[in-house]
Image 1: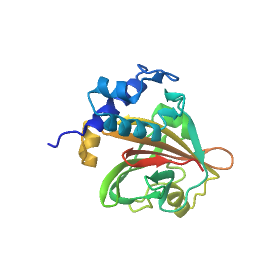
Image 2: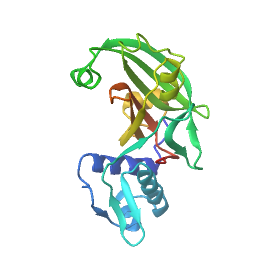
Image 3: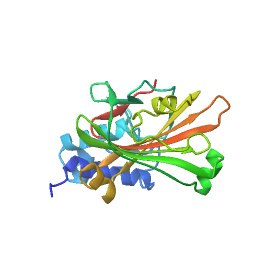
Image 4: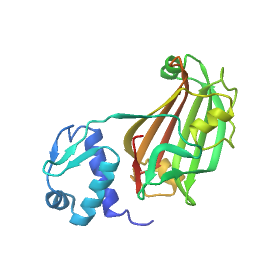
Length: 231
């Protein structure tokens, strides 16, 4: 098995410290030289890892203020353009476009939390692996009350807004919530990547004009070379 790049190892450890509260919100981190020495990597490697976490919204880097652990914030966007995922962009600033690599449609009982959110005890679900530029880059999960859609089409558009529109459901608003994670063993196998690869987790909820939840989507996306632009 290929050796995990040093910058990914540093990313995974920093994400762990932030998620578990070892690095509290507002904490000012040491400079790149000190961090590089602590993590046993070069300054260039540490700089790349810090840039990735800044893109993920976990760090706030300001001239004269240093690098601070950021307060998690929810970003909201209107309905997206067909074929893309809201404010997700590549390192050139272009919207990310996905294609479906593998999909599985099913139905199941809602969890207690889902039943409260959706007001429904049965959900139509869709689990997909998505590709970008020919490589598997994201794991996608969508849930919709069966009272609205009896089943989700495995060939549905990758974009949630387009998927709902094709099914005759037009959301009044789509809200995005961003967090960070690292791949589990099963994630790594599905995405054909190293264990503990940094992920951007985009949770998207679509609501109608009355605020009722129409659908929820969770996209677990390899973070390397990916950013998010609030629109």
